[in-house]
Image (tube, rainbow over all chains, first blue to last red; front, side, top):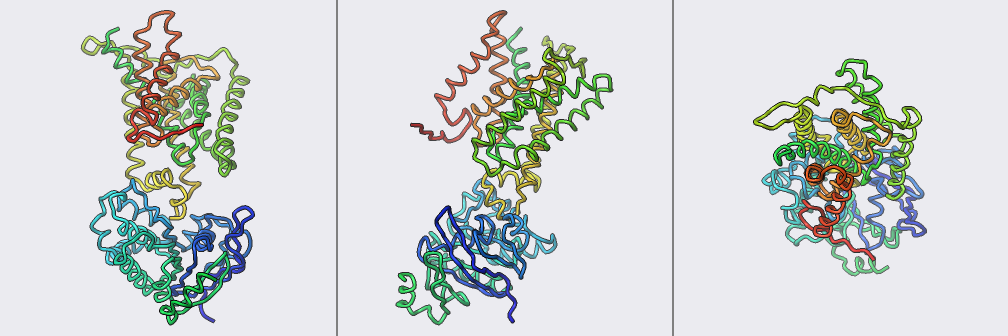
Length: 237
Length: 294
């Protein structure tokens, strides 16, 4: 049986009486890149926030390497090996790029290899390497996104959660972000990618799930990336 | 008294209010909580100095720091941590409750008449500097205040825990998602604010030796006014606000004579109202805050 890195079993997330995610089952193997797409309000971000412990899990189970992490604090989940790149980047605009990267190390489980990891993220995002002393607010949108991913990678996570990393970015920047994600996956990091850009997600991910009204509706493979009719139907279902 | 003399005293008083402002601002930064019980930490330190008045000053001062820091951490653990997910209004009321509880305890244990602290009383003596009669406590307050403020700035700017505190003060949720330990950062903020409160206990009781159960209340209120005047958003604006209120209090006090001094707090608060009408975001805040009330 393959090595499950992250498992969601019957996950339910509620905001008051409203169920944002219902009975969601998801299993991601070690080193996989899995996409989660769907219309606004489908429950994609809520799923990531529930995994990360930011919003409570109303029902169901979240497991990392087979161990339940349900109910743990966000910092404990980060230190267990999951990093989140939140929607809207949430970099610290008043801190320098270098300080933002140092914050990324807060969840590291070992202090060794920081320099090597820094070289690795500088290789992925050369613009970050050249902006260490600049304030986060001085970066462009694309650079801020790169900083948010670089910061998450410096925790040396086993699982990287990304919430709409392409939001508000120019197409060329989106390409570079996705290229970086493929490289991160090649380095052995398991990735759960929430996106609005369906085609590029389906073509990049090993598997992509369509979420609508908090429920899984469809599973897609890279072979479906050019089947625009199926993609459109998935969104409108 | 010459204006220069008054200015020197104003700087000393300002440095004490600045310490209180930073102590309050540190906790506000990570919890978004204005701790109205902060003054009771100062009072606890003052009573410790009184209780240990027969011991060498160094021992009494060390005990003062130990008691105040322990009490600060205890309040965080017992009173504020269980309410961390409560509404801001609930948290605020909790600080009032803690403040009144501690004042009542002080009243029961030490009585209402007040007790005179004489630790470091020698610092009341004046030294002649270029025609100015400056009390040693003025110099010591200025030196200690500056050192502690610089130390706090270095702590926040140069250390990992300081970086975590700054991140938590900006966006606590994102900081936690990155692995910053909420309990550790908040406890550390209470620890540092406790150290600052203890320093204020020592410095303030040299200037005003009579310790009463409500000693800390006016100090906290004036420092809070300073924080609001300076701007609560950033620690350095709060610090400047603390200095500003100390300046205003000292300089206005210098101009008022005899019975007119009873109007000093009213004058200072009147000045604060004028400042806030002109600059609602605070005297030193960069961007005026857009505040709308209906």
